[in-house]
Amino acid sequence: MELVQIYIVGEDVSEDKDGSIIRSVIKKGEKYSNPNDGATVKVKYTASYNGNVFEKERELEFIVGEGDEQGIIPGLEQAVKKMKQHEKSKFDIKPSQAYGAKGNTDFNIPGDATLVYEVELLSFEKAKESWELSTEEKLEQSEIAKNRGTHYFKKENYRKAKQFYKKVKKYLEYETDLQEENKEKRNSLMLATHLNIAMCEIKLEDFSEAREECNKALELDPKSVKAYFRRATAYFQVHDHESAKADYEKVLEYEPENKAAKNQIVICEQKLKQFREKEKHIYAGMFNKFAERDSRNVKVSDESKTTKEADSKPEESAPMETS
Image 1 (cartoon, rainbow, N blue to C red):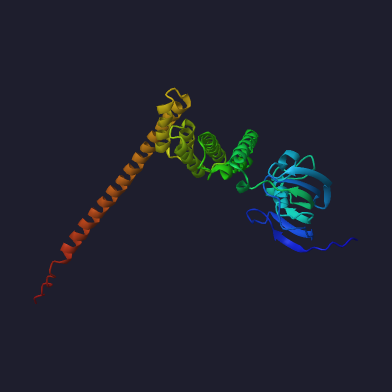
Image 2 (cartoon, rainbow, N blue to C red):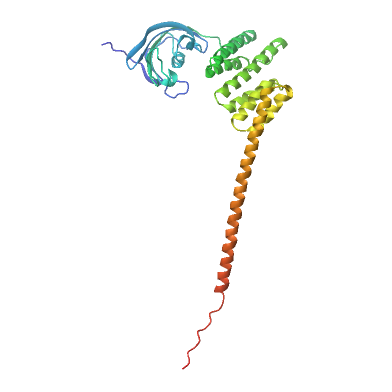
């Protein structure tokens, strides 16, 4: 039996430190750097479930952040970002970072399965960091990231889409001292990015973040119909129908024939009417309860007063018996 020396056991390398990806280092890597988002990596790995191998010594090259296009699970992508060149490690990957509750029928993996990956990082080429790029390169990379985000959005992978849209913010958020042509490109990309992230947040039901992104979009374009409509949607979903109605009305201010906004205003008015009716009944019920309680208090007070008056009369002496 081959004995394998383990250098580091049980290290949590998950992004949220929730124990979903645990690393045990078999062979230490070289140098000090790790692959970053967008890096091109070459790996060799063997994957197993309950001791049964379902992928053996698969060797492939992929871009970190786009591994799912080649069947790479999220946990493996995250794991690779923690590795050094030529490192070999074993990773225990929980369902949340693998095939989840659905499992994988192609590999006969049931739902909620923890998988084991033995991975060797053969080589990698880091993607340039934002500060290493020229303004033109940042604009170019932002366009690519936006398109990748839209690709994943269409596939209904909203978390992945949001990751790519956020890359645009990373590239351009602090690029403000620009020539006019580049400034227009930058603002156009940032506006689209805020609107796209807002849509992702709505799909992911994080309505507070969605409103925040819409607010930022409106800072760039105070007449953005999409920003008002999406913010209205976010308000509507948390039952703030008053604010939602106000934003839908702003949509009509700039697009008077917008049928969707008109329909939503009608729905908001119905919801507000229902709320006011419900509120009216609640207050009426409360008033009746208070009135009933006050009535009981008055009755008790009157009875108490009568008792006190009777008690205040002097005791009369019993008549003396005469013989």
